[in-house]
Length: 227
Image (cartoon, rainbow, N blue to C red; front, top):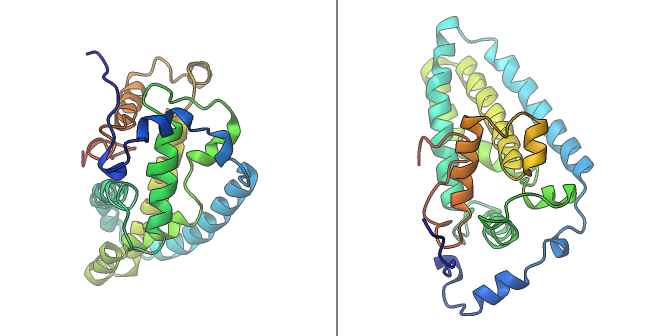
């Protein structure tokens, strides 16, 4: 199917200058202050501490409780979908930090990487792809009602299992998202270029990067279950 010129999205409604703004957008101007090393260190520290606490609670779970991992992964997929569709693509006052997420994702990330210009040109551009480390805390907070219900239902062990899965899911999201934005040579080195599953997921995400569709379709970055 022939691609059409992207139309202004509802997120930029009223801005007739959007095509010019997109054309003039420079990734370089948004890279100042980002350190991949610092980002990875902060993410590893916060994730490591939370994972240690979650694992200590998960040890209290009964063997049968681990079957709930399947349920939790499905819940995480729908939380991912809702988090991506709303605070990341709608200017919302709540939850705290939602407006910054919208700015960084819808107005910067999606202008930096269009559906036909997905690959990174510089490793520093990971700063336009990876979410700030504190986003992890916001995502985990959104899952708290499910985790508390699990605690009430089966005890602290299931609460711990939920957050072990949630943290692993978050890291998988970040890793996959970064890989979708690699070039063909990098994918060949990683043996992903001819991997049909990976290329399907990458194409699914690239479709989300069409400016005329980004606010409506393909919000799952991991597995398109909720989509």
